Amino acid sequence: MTTTRALQQDIVAHKRRKGFNTTSHDREVLLAMRELGELHEALDHNRRDEIGGELADVAIYLLTIAEMHGLDLGEEVVRKMQVNKARRYEPDESGTLIRVKNPVQS
Image 1 (tube, rainbow, N blue to C red):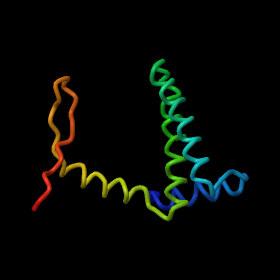
Image 2 (cartoon, rainbow, N blue to C red):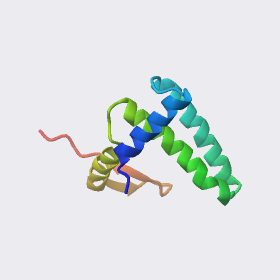
Image 3 (spheres, helix red, strand yellow):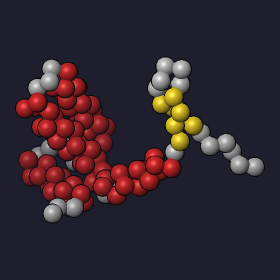
Image 4 (cartoon, rainbow, N blue to C red):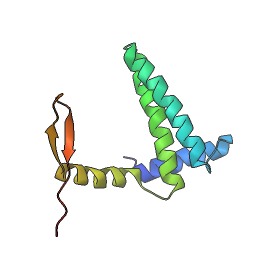
């Protein structure tokens, strides 16, 4: 099984071999946003044969950004999920769940 960090390193090495960007996080974010648009279109039109590939495209850009900044995206997701699990949410008047902020301790 491949670790997230090994996958990140493989993606960046592949991009370097092919001559793609591996230094501009701005460019990677913009390209990820373009891929999110393509994912949204595939989801909207229920093109199941395209959804997996579009999800992978988005993930590739996110994994690249993580590697560019020396982060293990898998570890970051685990860490963030621990934070999210400790949060409390309540529905607003429309039924949308809104995070309840902890009162400031004095």
